[in-house]
Image: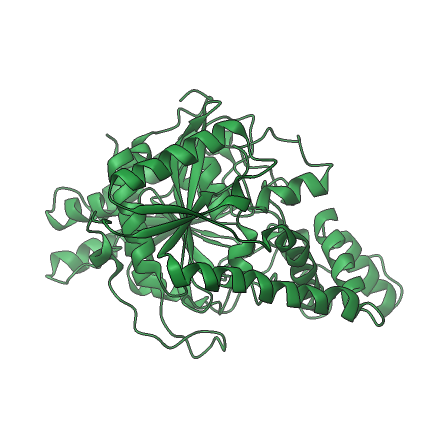
Length: 490
């Protein structure tokens, strides 16, 4: 097995035993990027090769002097390109921010830097995180490593594809309505959306501020626990950050789930769910039952209203957040403008893509005089009802289990001209963001030669039990060990 194929915890053990160096590891990943990136298009930009090796050498030197190496020390990783990196271009895969270089690091970037990780690149995404396929990028379309004719999911499609194709050992994405979990499911890797407030959003370029959350995309659950332990925690720079102690999440990975109560929401298995996905997810739930979990069907009656409520709330917040891109202070400015009003119009019209414009217009309409109560306020009330469904379910159950996505990865271009069909790809993930709870997607088999994702949902700040169940299933099932061949064959 090549170094780039290994997990964080496997590589850390090799570095500690001095069987490999950080330089050797980063060379391996960079050679992998050179080998497959032209096929995958996972990255918006990759870092300077010499700079990467210098940072890796600095970690090796520190370790040689007797310094203690962090579990993430020397590990090559990628960041979704809406996470600010000081001195490194951060574009949101949008023309309007094509040349934006942040003067500061996001808190998660800083924490990873302090852990001595090595940034190898910024990953492609749907523009401003608005999309479910990574086809809405202003720069390129990312391909699914399992089948190059298919999408990797979105909006963190580049991050998930980079991990699945071994172009990074792990990545960070952002999840507003499923943007970590759905691409993780499509690409056959592990993706976690933490509880809202557990991981700082400072330096995450906002899409919908009450829904956005940063989380890890990894090769297995152990790596997920390692990365979450490194990035979680209170941040005074983020007013929505919760001041709670952060455990070492690896301590939950016991493999023992006997007596754990898992609810199966029947609404997630209704019309529109592919037969192959249903079969694999139900088989995975059966495996959890064999491992000792108590499984029972539960009803979440307001699930059907989550999708329209989400697209009103998220679009309204996007309309407000994206008002700052006016061509005045930073970002793209139209050269063809005779006055300031024309400059505003042309800069935004030329700088934003069609999906971003669609959501800005929808959100602006929902917030406008005469429509605020009818749309936005009503959507907020529905959000409360959706959260109430989860609150009641968690009075009885430790976790909930469902599909991550109603289908496996679809073909590139298949849904691009049908926004509603694209929005439906988030039907299983959106309720979790509205409720603010954590959820994880992990591979549970294949349908039509493409990965299927099992989604486990937990109580607020219940990442520990969530990871415990995910780890127990993963170790039993072993689907995390499967690797794509980059030509569509499993």
